[in-house]
Image (cartoon, rainbow, N blue to C red; front, side):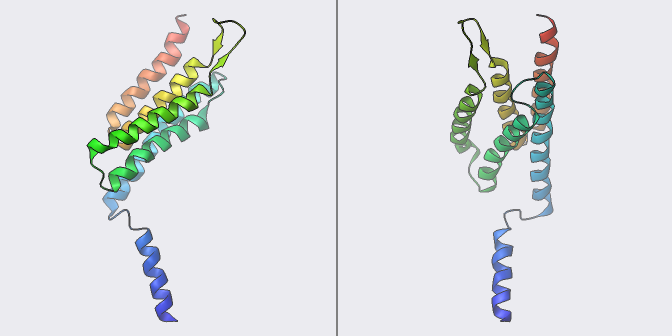
Length: 155
C-alpha cells in the first residue's frame, strides 16, 4: 500500500511542477495580480459610470489575457510565436466587445462603443502585464483612465 501512496504523491507533485522555484512563482503572482488590479481600476470606472461591462468583466478580461500569454511563455514557446496567441486573443476580445455595442433606432444612436474599446484596452493591458511589461501596463492604464474620465468632461 505504501508504494501506491508514494506513486500518487509523485504524480501530484509532478502535476504541480510547472513553477520550478520561488522566483518563478513570484513572477507569476506579480504579473497576474497586476493584470487584475489594473483591469479592476478601469472596470471600477466603467461600473461607476453605470456601464454594462464593469469591474468583474474588466478584471476577468485582463486576467485571462495575461494568462493566455503567460502559459505559452512558461511552456517555452518562443516570444516570436506568441504572435499567433495574440492574434486569436485580439479577435476573441473583438467579439466580446461587439456584445457591448447596441444600435438604437437611428444610425447616429449607437451605445457601448467606449465600453467595447475599454474591454479591448484592458485585454492589451493584461497582455502587457502577462509579458512582464509592468511599466507599460501601468502607463496604458493611466492613459485609459484619463481618456475615460477627463475627456468625458470636455464634451
